[in-house]
Length: 509
Ligand SMILES: NC(=O)C1=CN([C@@H]2O[C@H](COP(=O)(O)OP(=O)(O)OC[C@H]3O[C@@H](n4cnc5c(N)ncnc54)[C@H](OP(=O)(O)O)[C@@H]3O)[C@@H](O)[C@H]2O)[C@@H](O)CC1
Ligand SMILES: Nc1ncnc2c1ncn2[C@@H]1O[C@H](COP(=O)(O)OP(=O)(O)O)[C@@H](O)[C@H]1O
Ligand SMILES: [K+]
Image (tube, rainbow, N blue to C red; front, top):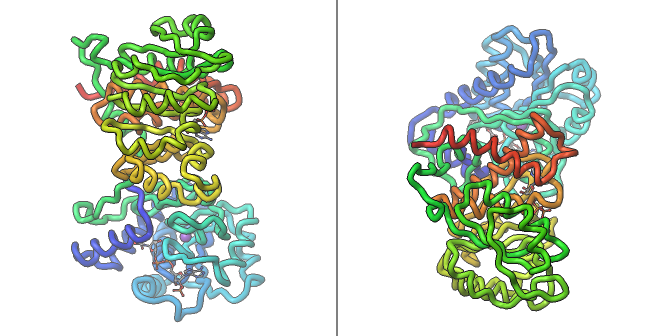
């Protein structure tokens, strides 16, 4: 499913009207009806519904929604929160149809006048402003929102909660706090941003009859388990271990052997054919007792940490993952630089490897094979030289600019994980839950990633599938056997069995 900016949505609107000849009023009719039918799943026949109508086309949708609900026998009061002269174009046409159908509109006068009505409502539908909002809310929207957000009524928004910007970059705004939002045609960027996500509540996207072949596709989409099912590699019956990738993992230390254990087990559970683990001698017995299937390379150490010499053998593997438990000692950059220069398959850099990568970024531009960086926001802010707050305001832009500048593939992790390819294409994964907000989750993800990257033809599919497999496994576990409190990263590794069983039974053959 595509993810759009406000401008891209307006371009789609124009394609529908100008290129396909769909009348604007017709589009508004089908949008309003689709939204009303979707919202009905949350409205009971005996509910008292208030719908708030604003000045633009979002308000126009509101007139269609109100008429649809009233025609079906629901009890709906329709309040227009702006003066008549503000209602124009298609919205005005639908207001006329609404009135001519025998329904009434209440004019907003003061907040004191509206308040008693709001207090009696079971459901409040916000059709005030949508993608056309600019800057901080003016009156009367600001006061209405302040009052409505304190009510006990169930709050629903049309397309986006009034006041929430459709795009990135703004972190300070007042907005309608919806329990549920019915999104028109495609989710907007703000659905996935830390500052705006909570205002949407639960959400769903409805189709409104746009002319699909004429719509310019944005280079940005939502990726979910159904996409994974369609792109998951088939394990050929006549394959051998070499067909499924020969991977090397470098990390761990006397103090952090667990991180490499988790990454290694996750990679093997993800179908990797052969795995070698390079770590300090002291950690090998502990790690190997948990990972019997791997072979081991002993690397030079200094006081229990990987010392950082170049690792000649790295070039003989199909792909290399480095970083978990590596430590942040001066000198370890030498190891990273040697990997950048010599690994001729994909090089995945995670955790401490990312911290050390900062001074080496320019040399990534010379790599002939893919580099994949998997930072959480703290690590990415460090790499990009911005504050975490600034980064989280505009994570799509920062990711894209960084990926293009250094020619790297980027997985920016979080509740909405943004995956960006070196040519700027983006995918978003929203699977997973707060049970993953624990040390070790990232190690499991990077293990899955090494496994998938070495077995999947398309690197973008491998990256996005890994994130969804990781998140969906956590979701299934917390729905069926665990809680978000007790879920451990190692439980997620065990849970992969269930996920992969589902995927291999549905994969193409
Ligand atoms: N494919 C599509 O595109 C389709 C779109 N559709 C629907 O249309 C919606 C977009 O409609 P839209 O463009 O009319 O914008 P919308 O959000 O209703 O508001 C514009 C009004 O807001 C006002 N205003 C702005 N900022 C403000 C502020 N801070 N404080 C106060 N007022 C402020 C602004 O006033 P102005 O600044 O111009 O005086 C103007 O009057 C979209 O979300 C979807 O629901 C569907 O019907 C069909 C297909
Ligand atoms: N609240 C959350 N909802 C969904 N996924 C989450 C949440 N918190 C963390 N995750 C996921 O868990 C992983 C955490 O990675 P990271 O921060 O590197 O952890 P660590 O380094 O501690 O192992 C990422 O895949 C991230 O997307
Ligand atoms: K709205």
